[in-house]
Length: 410
Ligand SMILES: [Zn+2]
Image (tube, rainbow, N blue to C red; front, side, top):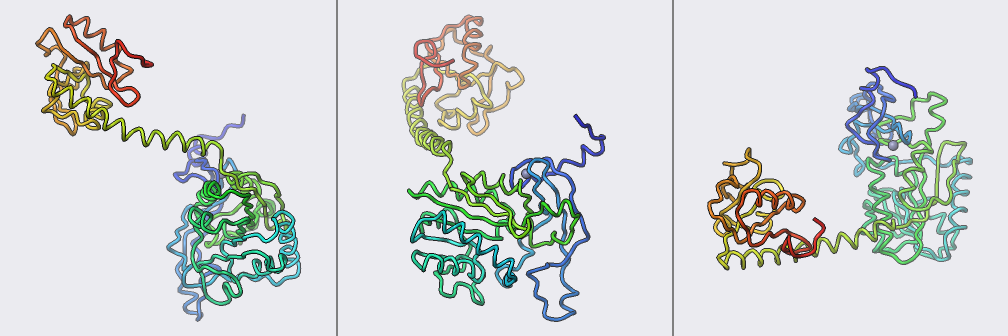
């Protein structure tokens, strides 16, 4: 195992986690002097250009997936709504690349598809894709910039695509996202939400994504790739890592001489999510029923006039007292085995926390022990103190149960 010097290991930690894999260990990658916007500024005079605000570039690289990102990036510095993003794409090799990727989509996606392009810009790619399908299908473009040619001849929405809302609404067969993920500060959030949303439609959903690739940058030591508008820079490894959150990565290729990476993935809601959702929903519903039921049990106990002691005054016990409204009028007696807590009051409810030694009576009807896992120890302590009790109650499966007589795992 290679060891680093002490000063180096300290440098590795960053307070930011990798936007792709959430790993917290990253290293300084590139920290040039602050620079102006490179593609979204559009200054109209030389003076305006020279006076442009300089923005911080603090690129780190994740040691787990190789992703590079600007930890000083802020969306507020980018005038997406005002200035269009213009991408020159008339070169013949680039056009050839686009033809190749469209052919890949035609091969995979069924006839008459509903296709959404997220960040479609002026819509060239989507329109050409519609031509390839002989306009048979529905072709929908999203782009917050609605100026210029955007959306001409397409079903177009001048807003940000929201996977949670729009997947269910449009029920697409294919979502295309070309040169957009590198603009997001939270690409993982986007793809996870997309996978989640795909659970709402009962047909296959394909996701095609393409981003600039920095694999060559490492070898060539190239620096001008790193400008402000791209907070995220994908290596082929970090891109694959990201897409594995979407489902099955079916095609994964580099194109345009290795300068871009693109992939087609079959979007799948994760199985664990579906089963976990069912469990969580039932916990959520049951929690409401449990609170009402135990409140009624406590109310009846208070009305019965039985001498009741709650054993424990902080932590789980305080949570119990507040959750189930075991108020100080109905349940004035709260004791705690921990003498350091004695003399304080129960947070929220206000009962004085007493020492068990203060229990004067030699017979207590009911002891409630909110910390189930301590009930065994507490019942031993009660026996040692030589007063007798009618019943010990603990919370289990939505009700208060008799610790000595009923079934429970404690
Ligand atoms: Zn990472």
